[in-house]
Each structure stands twice: as C-alpha cells, then as structure tokens.
Length: 406
Image (tube, rainbow, N blue to C red):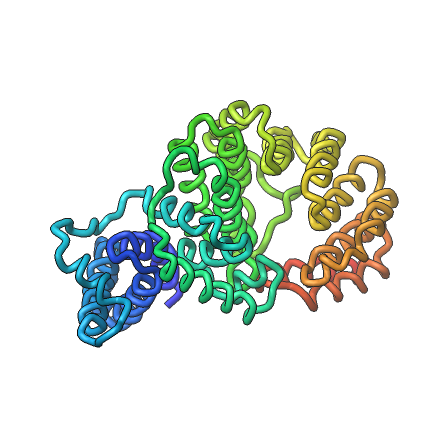
C-alpha cells in the first residue's frame, strides 16, 4: 500500500490538472481522479502497477468524468449539462501524459483575484499536490474544518463565476506569481520536512517542487523571484539523500556526510541564485542561507555571521515568528548559546507560534549544546508532545536519551 500511495501522490496533480482542463470543472476532475485511484487500488494490487500509471489513471478518470457528465446532463436544470455538451462535442482528445504546464495552469487559475489568499493556497495544495486536508491545515496553521470549508467554497466560486482554467494573459502573470511561488515552496516543504506520517521525507513532493520551480523559470525566465525559489529548493534538495539513514532515521545537518551531497544540484542552485540577484521576495534570503550551508566545507566552517544577516533580512521582510525562532538558533552558533536563548525568548510568546512545534525543539537544542541537560530534557519532552512525523519523534527521543545519559 505504501508503494501505491507514492504512485497516487505523484500522479494526482497531473491527472487532476488534465481532467480539469478537459472538463472545465474542478469538482468533476477531482472526484473522477479519486474514483480512478480507488479502482486502481483494487486492480493494481491484483494485477500489478501498469508501466504508465499516470496514463492509466487519466484514462479511467476521464471515463468516470464522462459518465458523470452524461448522467447530470439528463437531469433538468443541472449546471453540468453545458459542460457535458462541450466535452462531448469536442474533437480534441485529452493528453494521457499532460504537458507539464498543466499544473502551472492550475496554480495560476487558483491564484485568481476572486479568491482570497488563504483559499488560493489551500485549493492549490489540494488539487496539485494531493495533500490531505489535515496536511494542509498543519501547513497553514488552521483547523481541518476551516481548510475543508475554504476548499469547497473556492471550487464553487470558480465554477459559478466561470473562471477559466488556464494560464492568464502575460499582463496578468505578475500579480499572480507570488501565489504560485508560495504554493510551489509549500509543496516542496511538505516533502522535505514531512509534517506527519511514517516518513521524514516524501520524495514525490520534493521532486514535484523542484520540477515546478524549474517550469516556472522556463515560463518566466526574467522573473528573479522565480530563480530565487528554484535556487532555494535545489540547494535544499541537494542534501535530501543524506538527511535520513538506511533505516529512515533523521540525520541532522551537522552530522551529514557532505561528500554525498548532490554537487550538480548545488551548482544549478547557485546558478539560479546568481540570476535571482535583486529579487524582492522572501525566497532570496532563504536561498542565501541554503547556499551558505551547501558551500560550507564543514559544519565548523559555516558562515554563521552571514546567515544571521540573511535571517535579519528575512524577518524584516516577512515578520515571521518561525523565521525569527530559526534565527535564534543561528545567533546561538554565532554569538554563543546563551545569546541564542535570549533571542528565542524575544519571540517565543508570539501567539502565531501556538499552532507550531517550533520553539520547544530549538530551545531544547540550544540548552543541550550549552550543557544544560536537565533543562534540555524538559523541553525535549515538550517538543515530543507536538512532534509530527514518526522519524521526527524518534530523533527527539534520541536527543532526550543523550541528555539523560549526560
């Protein structure tokens, strides 16, 4: 089942995007792909996964969608009748392997100004990445019910307002690009730092985030913020295979084998970073931080002073308490762990951090490094209460055991 889950997550976005473009209706597309996945679960477990699972899912989903549209068109007053008439008379066959622009098309559609920003992001993460409602709720620091309602309202608004499922004209790309950048990074982040489940890393989401960032750069080669995002995800992704051991246990940055980092991805990331010079968005200082880690010859030679400067800029741009908390850790390495704890105290009571498990593990790490093991134990236990993925919890338990022994 785990292997099939990875296939479904990888193929979900392209299949939904292709069906939405073909049918013109997001709900029809999503429901049809869900039905196709359910059928695949039954068929593939018995017969094996086909050579082209995406093509299989898209074909079955198209047939399910056509059946639904046909049924709905026979009922008086149903809105889907017009949709059925449109697709039933179309001479254009759907692409079984949709072009990669399909996902970007959906992202730009979901960035329509008729939708509020939170609804834009929630809808995009659901349709393109296939993230579940609880996963999106954790990413956006909202309740499951609130996210579910936002997604439903957004789909209804797109259908009723007849918002076209296409990339907008060039003059409108700029105003929607920040949303697309944020969505792509959210997809990558959920893959790289999985917030729940048995795995610390979800490779299919990492791959999708890297691919979409590259597609956006190809679509908008002069957009510096797009290059900043591409640099950020590539530089992070260069370390992906060293972040867990053979058993799936997390390996912190200071213990990773740097000789195993992907030098090709680092080189491409640095190239994008040069193209991003002058970018105004928040991805640039994050990419600078990632580049400083990726190019440091060793943990001991990390340029913490410049990393702190980049964090200062990031916090000033975003007013993000999460960024400020992470900055405190960098301050600890630059100025001493007591200074890092003081910087963390300055932001720890921010109410926006209440839904996150950010402060406790950072405080515990700073206390452990400062040799204050009794205090560190208490904060590792607090961090464990709010941990997400099982590997993250296992890592915290390991650190707690080290503090007990010390």
